[in-house]
Length: 96
Image (tube, rainbow, N blue to C red; front, top):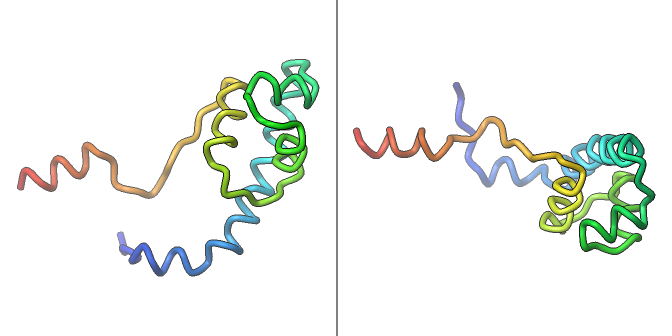
């Protein structure tokens, strides 16, 4: 597997973030509706503003990861990171 230096990956961050959030937003909206919640109810449950929920569902890029994670957790979801070494992987490497 080819490793890419972290700074090389960050060069595309603004462009990539729009793509990421444009995919997350519809999933959040779908989960909220499936649970029968309004945007204000979700905002109250997650401890964020209604405007934040509206913008997140619309796919607006945000650097408020803590708020986005609270919304996702309020809907019963989790965030998974892929393509990165895990703590177990680091421990095995350090043991060598």
